[in-house]
Amino acid sequence: LFGWRQRLARGEKGVVQVLAVDRDQARVCFGYCQAFLQQPMLKRLVRRQTADTIELGNSIAIEVTTNDRRRVRGRTVVAAIFDEVAHWRAENTQNPDKEVYRAVKPAMATMPGALLIGISSPYARRGLLWEKHEAHWGKAGTILVVKAPTWVMNPTVPRNGEVIGAAYDTDPEWAAAEYGAEFRADLEGLLRLEAVQACIDSGIRERPPSPTHQYAAFCD
Image (cartoon, rainbow, N blue to C red; front, side, top):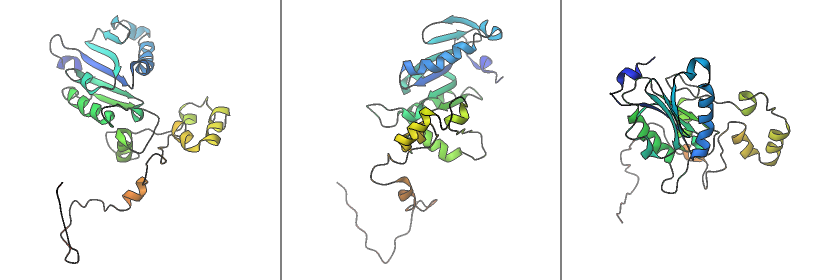
C-alpha cells in the first residue's frame, strides 16, 4: 500500500515491532498476529517462525521485544506497537516510554505511512500516553486517540457485573483506570495537576522585569 518493499535495500527487512514491559507480555499481542496470519489468504506469506519472530515473504518481519530504546535502533520500522505503554518503567529512567518513542521515530523516517500504535489501560497523568491523550483526544489531526471503558470495548463484560462492580466498590480510583479508561489523579504526590496548571499562563515564555519587585540570583 505504501510501497514499503520498494524502499528497502537489498537484504534489508522492514520490521513490525511489538514492544512491552517484558517479552511475556509482548507475546500476548504477538499471539494475535500469529492467529491473524493463519487465515488462508495470509498464511502463504509466512516463510519462517520462531518464538519471537515471524518472517514474511514480502521482506517484512514481525518481532516481539522489551521496551528498550536500543532494540529499535539499526532497524527499518514499518510499524511499532507499544503494549501497555502507560505502565512502562525501568530502573535507569523514569520515562522509558518517551525514550523508546524518540528512538523509534527515526527508524520510521524512510517508510511513508509507518504506523505507531499505543495500546494501554491509562495510569498516572504523566508520560507518553497522557501527553498524546491531552494533545490529540477529540481533536482533528493525523493522530487518533480512542478512549472507551471496558464494557464498551468488550460488551461481554457488564458494567455492573460481579468483577467491575466489586472493583468500583473496593477501590474507585483503581477501577476507573483499569476498567473506566480514566487517568488516575491520586498518584500525583504533593500537588494535583489542576493546581499546577492553574498557576501557569499558557503561551507565555518570558516576562519583562517588574519595577515593583527586587530580583536575586545565585549559582551553587
